Length: 158
Image 1 (tube, one colour):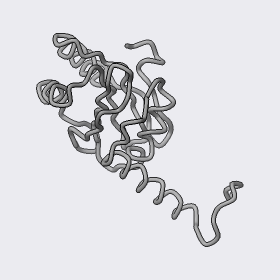
Image 2 (cartoon, one colour):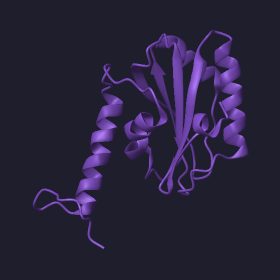
Image 3 (tube, helix red, strand yellow):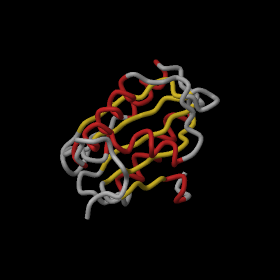
């Protein structure tokens, strides 16, 4: 079924999706410090195209000010198709380097299913505990897949 949204002449659906991915990647690499991520929907829109179609797991951290403005966004870890090894020490170090007041984590599931695994829940709790030692709050953890996005804060896990 063709997309009902009017598009510029000469661009296919694939062209538009590629353009959206390129824009998302640019936004991640060239952080706009005026962006405030005040709810899971804003964070979804900020990260979804960047992570949705990756063939390996990527773990991204958004470093935020006290007013939830983006300081930086970094892909801290890259893994395989089923998991990504995450070091709480490296997350803490990056948060300290950016002088973050709070963080939002996001990672993708190449399978497409955005359901958080037990390992996802366990590492999130470990990161919450480690970052709390230096008064850095974890605001959310998003799991992004081609079938949608799951927010830990919306699930009541955080």
